[in-house]
Image (cartoon, rainbow, N blue to C red; front, top):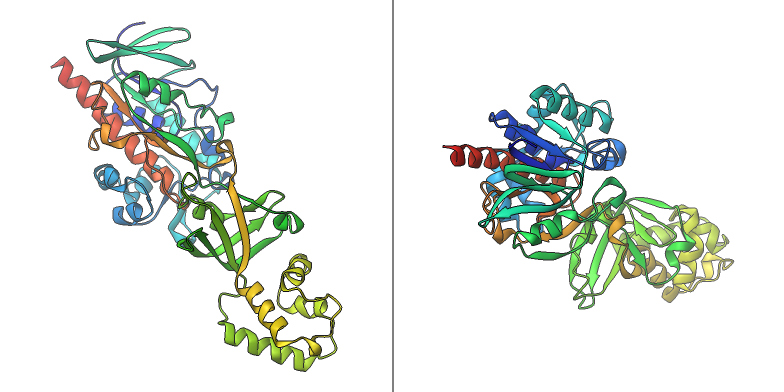
Length: 416
């Protein structure tokens, strides 16, 4: 093959943005992706709607990055959410902002975002190559190309944007880790983030399919330290806990060091005293009602048998004979429904991969490797990850932009 200025490995969000950014600066670009279609993981983001950024400030983005946020300062300042929104609307994708600053296409179709990027790549003259990278070509400590299954692709600059290990069916198979390792990089062990949690018992399985809204979910470690607490939505599944609150909570966990308990406040708007007053009022209005029927005014139907068992109150007990101790146990069950967590679901089920290429080995301004000149890294491959709400795609866009511009500038300097 003839000499290519920049070879981008990976056709996901970061890779497509890197390719477009490098091409915009006038260099020749080849985008290498083994899948037949680009952006396969984008199809499933935001439940198929593509939550492509969060309408906040650069500082707002960094507050939602639990690890290595400082590394992103330069990239997210130069290509902040406002610029990302303007960019995609300029590609013909009208956007809307929803609850929590989440930004979606007005059409609610992830395919519109992917199509817009694909047509932009074609229009810009980026060459698409359906192949898999098997190794980097390195001479005298510099990257000189990529070895593909179908041959060698010479390049003055190479951008690795291969993703992590989550959703391997979309192409995130960890290829980038060993390619980066070949170039001398340290890989922080990949682990799941934004991932459902497994119940250590069978409580959740008894309520499988039940979703809760406007509850407070708290995650505490074995030292009773609160690592996460937020109000929102969650879901019971056959294996444990899922839903937005639980996925966000998982990003705060350190599974190598700690064990955790999930605690659900089913009535966050009511203090314990007010909840007790409400229970006493309801009892006075229907004193002979059986306990399990009485709970229908307080809890979702599918939760009632489990809550009654937790409070150790017989289902057929008339509520007017409920003791003070039983009432206290009921209040504790409602305000602090505990689920011991055995751990996260497998990494292949995670929305995002934590860990990856050590950020201290990468220039935060250009995304160029400090180990091997001519190599650039972007997206989920780096050891940066964020909470839900569009922040992880914002990281992909801004690191992809920085890597594309950095690689193009490097090529021009090498030629000059």
